Amino acid sequence: MIAVDVASKSLLLRHSDPLTVRSLIDSSRLLDHSQYNVAVRHTLDATKVLRNMGIPAPAPIKYYYRWPGKFKPGAHQTVMAEFLTLHRRGFNLSEMGTEKTAAALWAADWLMENKHVRKALIVTPLSTVERVWLSEIFGVLMHRKAGVVHGSREYRLHMLGLDLDFYIINYEGLAIADVRRAITARGDIDLVIVDEASNYRNAGNRQYSAFAKMLQPHQRLWLMTGTPTPNAPTDAWALARLVSPERVPKYFGQFRQQTMQQVTQYKWVPKPDASRIVYDALQPAVRFRKQDCKDLPPVTVSARDCPLTKEQTKALAAMRKQMQAELRAKQITAVNAADTITKLRQILCGSVRDPLTDDYIPLDHAPRLQVLMDCIAEASAKVFVVVPFKGIINVLEKEVSKLYSVGVLNGDVSVAKRNEIIVNFKAQADPHVLLCHPKVMSHGLNLTEADMCIFYAPIYSNDQAQQVVERFNRSGQTRPMTVIRIGGHKLEWDIYSLIESRRLGQQQMLDMYKSVAQG
Image 1 (cartoon, helix red, strand yellow):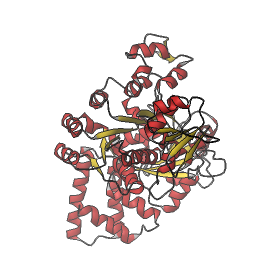
Image 2 (cartoon, one colour):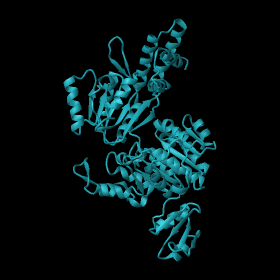
Image 3 (tube, rainbow, N blue to C red):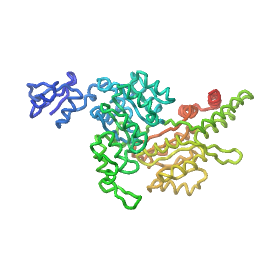
Image 4 (cartoon, helix red, strand yellow):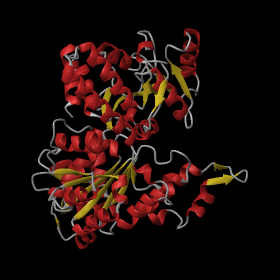
């Protein structure tokens, strides 16, 4: 029997051997009570001792934390935060869209309040550095200081020299030796949170090796990913070596022999009990599916940043120079502005239409493509991607089909063929991904087999944007849904904002033109 006395911050127990409890926990005392015979100060350390004794003591954060921020935590987030505070190293394997970010921040904040953690390092893909983590810290932990460690080597070192609570860095940033040395030299980073941790599933690459060497024994480590084994059961080995190395063999080849069977010289397939072995390896862990989270909103909207390539940056600079000349030479109309902004959007997407031939000329757009692929990998069900330009759909079809079965819905596809693709999307395993032009997302289209909608770039029409979302947010949908907006430039985020507020008109088009031209 166990109860919590919040007023005295104590756990009250009825235990068969109260003297053992008393001997193991200094902050305990014996009671002369009809129901309880031991009182224990409800601290994190005492809770861990009791749990090791088989006593299901609740985590202190559940009772003594104020849960700051604009929203109350969902029941599943409370469980996540409890788990993270109780485990120095562990996994949160919950699906994308289960609000893992806020749960991790609340857990970190409670540990800081109670002097278990001084400062935290957040390692995450570049696409989520600001739009997800920095934004969430400002929304959930407004009393905490956070900064993004990204930019030149000098700027990164400058940021690491500041007195912050959270240092947010992208994976590539940790590949810089001076940055790792600066992190280690601080000596006060007690917690490392890794988002999209499946990026560390390959122990043979440089990023993994650098990260593993940087970790200190005293540091807490929380690995967060909804897809720990996206390719094969063997993906779990490298992650387990970071959190619980005693649960897996020392060498990758041994783990592969445990989980995979070689059928030809180059082909391996999972053994029947591979899932059990992976489950045992990735412990301790907490996991929630979106459909199990009763507190989730039906549709969660998220944003992903993507950096521009040198080729895109050069093309934008040339366009800006041309726009500046036009501003000096003539009065720009809303029509002129809209045409120019369309060209800018095509550059940002990675494929520009030649007005003479109507052919699309591809530009290097690898970062945006990688963000798209990462998002698709995180989905719990099927995915449809909204792409504003036909030529870019053609480019994406070639790339996405290297990993997933793909269907295309645009004006070049006949109505009969579109219907066939939609029927297969709804009734068959393939296609897994639909690449869609917004103009063919008709009002009657039902895509409830998907739980993720990705805007590869913004579209102009609020009505179209709403109709796109309604393709899967409708009767028959059984899963919480995620809408992801990808952007790589202020222009795109301005369009998203204007569309959402229904304020995109001629004057706003002219304002965006001038904003880009002026840099």
